[in-house]
Length: 417
Image 1 (spheres, rainbow, N blue to C red):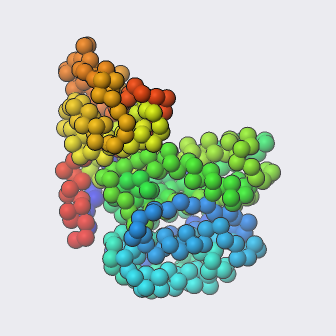
Image 2: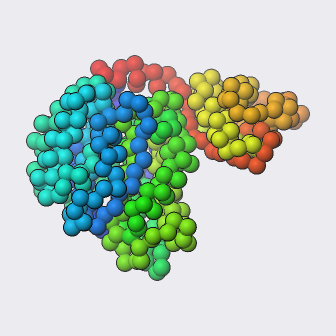
């Protein structure tokens, strides 16, 4: 694997944020030597009884054994008096590993179950790393007892670091919201840097809250929010076999249970949860392999939101658009190209394009006041906002991406070495 030595220039200032402890959640990490000796590569999260878990996962046809197992367990409750656990390893994705991959998942779930005294159906596993190599699960089982002994409430930052692969910084985000006079806290961590594209993106994401909420309501909220957060980012248009987002609500906050997604309190919680999901999604893009620019592409004036998303993702995934941004080249013709190939309804003579506040094209033609000098100067910024107005209807969609540099090639050409 290419050695990552420098933190992304787009990393949030100040390093890993201070995240609130979530009542009912404990973390532990260990170095199991899954791929590299001496590197922390396993995370165990212990969740109290009464926790409910929602999740969304990749729809890849070659998704991994851990993903399939998590999907099967989602929403299931074997014993209401028992808690849950999430076990994650980096270095090996346990994907495309056949029956052996399933056996590894079963062995790991059995080990967690024995250490924590919970049903195997309450154990969720995730794996990230190289595809197609058998997971040395015995190495993880070998540190399971130490993980169980080391569980504590404050180790969320080490947890975020344990799940990194080509990431250059650990990713965390948090929010608080007052519901019926009670403060509800949300803390989340994520990993992801390459193989990032909607459906979901190559990421592992774990979000914890003390909110008291019914599992079906939490699931609907998470699924809805995913569409405009993690399903609106792309680094390289490649969808992973291992994408997983799990949201665990312990129910420890002193509040009435949220049972109706249409209620005001559900809306308040969803707004706070979206802020955490959006921040983590943006951090994944900011850590895109080799990235030097953070790019927002907003499409307005579409006939349907589906069309708006098609255009936004066509621009965000275009190698020509992304390399132009890397070269600080205000080549808006490449945006025109990406709109045209998107498959969305578009009218050349109604199309307008802006870089930041600079209108570069309008009504299907170069803007009369267009300044190449001003547009080129704007492209030197670390954050680039590109707006495409189709001029056809009321719908809009925003996507986030990064530039495509030689750094991306260097990292991925040497990934398995």
